[in-house]
Length: 408
Image (cartoon, rainbow, N blue to C red; front, side, top):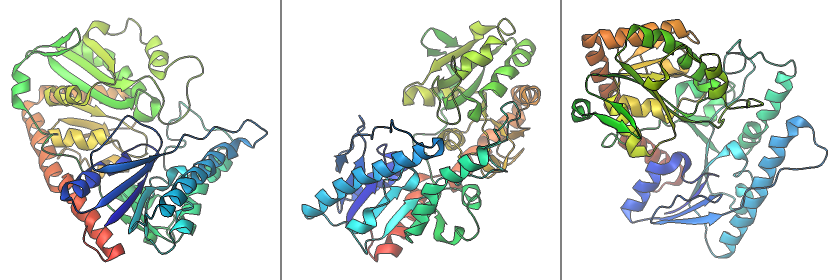
């Protein structure tokens, strides 16, 4: 078969299915994306340069839409070149969120398009207005409607949709949902697995050391920002560290912003830390930024209590990976998370935005060793049953077969 994947950031959500297709040795795989250092043997890349934001008069709510249409045009040009060279895919698989897939049905009419619908923005019940510390602006409704333009245009293609969780699926309007199939995403459980040997050694991250006698609390986000609860985590540190002198904390994440607004003058980490200066022992807290993947795995394998916080938004890969590793997890009590973590069975669900209760729940897992061990084992078993990337590949290939009549 001939596959065309489209995602601005190679390989995006398609890492495992790409590896599966390449390993079979049966397929021609093409991937359209923006430039990136990532490569994969057996996958041909067609690169387009990121479009330049408009500089003229433009409605503020139209800036993202303008960029989406520019990306669509760039991908359209590449698609036409590929077709002129004789490339006709059996299926197109791509992420709708950046507009790249909009015109591909014009280049290859009749070729099925399986599009990734990641998130439908709503005024209530999701990330907007979730955190009273950051009040919404009166014009937010108009902005949200504009942000959904790409979702609605992608729907108008009358093709085929996918999304990874029940919660994300439920965010789309009822009339939209029948056109989106839930294809869950998994992790590599041969890599994301417990390693008891790590716990008997001293863990060294730069100059920061965690001995076997220390209790290690971990937190992970791509960036340390409000959407991923960095303020809730930081504000839990004084109580946590005052109660347990043996606790050390590693908070992995960069100082950029992935979701939501930026602070005008500094990183969100710096902003929240400013008010906490002197209230906890900073020498026992490491914030190493983003770390290499193998180091990230070792840190989670050594963790005594792992914190996952988020707004009602797309859940992070780190939640799935921490379950595969068998971490003792404390996570935000919201439906997006409880789809994975069941309170007191596979982890502890902690009240949203409540730093005091977060500290209490971390302390509970550090003090109750039987509960800690039970939750670790249950998290791993859940991952084996529901999050194995082999299950993801099987479901994905089944869907491809349904759309093309061919077995990938």
